[in-house]
Each structure stands twice: as structure tokens, then as C-alpha cells.
Amino acid sequence: MGEKITLARPYAKASFDFAMKTNSLSVWSQFMNLLKEVTLNSKTLNALEESGESSRVIEFLSNLSDDSIREKVRNLIHVVIYHNRLSLLPEICEEFFNLKNLYENTISVDLISAIELSNEDKGDLQTKLEKRFSKKVKLNCQIDSSLLGGIIVRAKDEVLDYSLRGKLKRMNNILQS
View 1: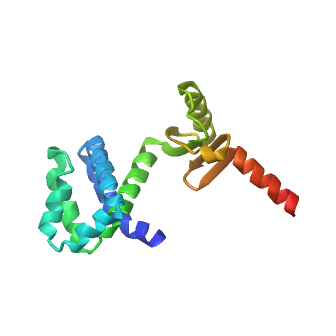
View 2: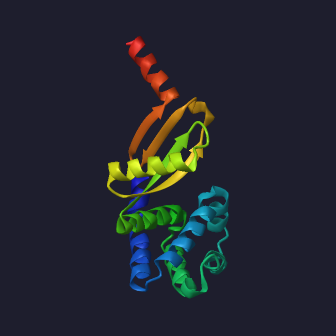
View 3: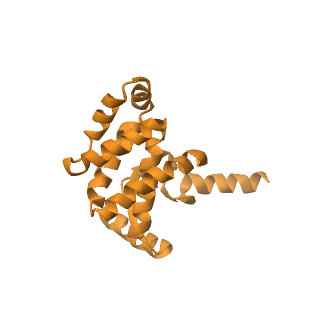
């Protein structure tokens, strides 16, 4: 995975730099989000790679973008295909969003709970997480009933497990040692 990110980084940086230079970060973000959704499906990505018709792939992927950036998107996809890096598109998108989050002093946090949290609870947690990370927090809320109760917070490489399932596992480990 590390090698893929390293290979993807120049493409993401070039896209991000261009978006900043042309004041089109939101349009590029929308495109990268769609591109990520399309290419995360391995069947779709494999079909694109195996099609062998780069002009059709370029057209298909560039049509995901807004008209205002379509020509630059075509150039990006063309270069990616020319260097046989089509399989890196998900990582290019991921790295683009890492650069965007760094620029905006934002962190994306996965918040997994056993039950649906109220908007008030989400707001309270967001405020506490913003204080903890000293960044604006974007919450990605998910429900996992196997937690039994509580929450798990994932931010980059940090995991905070406040779930009942996690507490039971820790107690079990202590009792077994």
C-alpha cells in the first residue's frame, strides 16, 4: 500500500496544485469523489484496465467531471494511462483528499457506534474531537450493532475504542494473562 501511495502522490499533488492555482478546489473535489467511488469497485477498475481502448477510458472518466475542468481531467487520465497507473486511481483520490484536508486543517474521522446517535451527540463528539486533534473534524458516522454499546473513533492511524465489545475483550485479555 505504501508503494502505491508513493506512486500516486505526484498525480494527486499536480491535481491539487492545479485546483488551488485555478481556484477550483471544490470542483476538483467533487470530481475526485466521483472518481474514487467509481474506481473503488475492483470490477469497474479491472474492466477499465482491460478495455485496451485508452480514448474510451479517458472519455468515460473525464465525463465524471464538471465542464470547467474536463480538459485538465482528460490530461490527467491520459498521463495516468500512459504510465500504466490506472490501478492507482483510488490512491490518487485518497492522496488528493489528504492534501485538501491538510490545506483546510481538517481531519476525517470515522465514528462507529452501536446505535444511531442524535445530532446533539454527534455535535458534542465533534467538538471534543476537534479539541483533541486541534483540527476541524469531518465525521463519517457508521452503525455496527456488534459493538454492543459505545463508540469507536478512527482518525488516520489512531483508533479510540470506547465500545462495550472492546472493553469486554480487554477484560478477557487481562483475565487470561
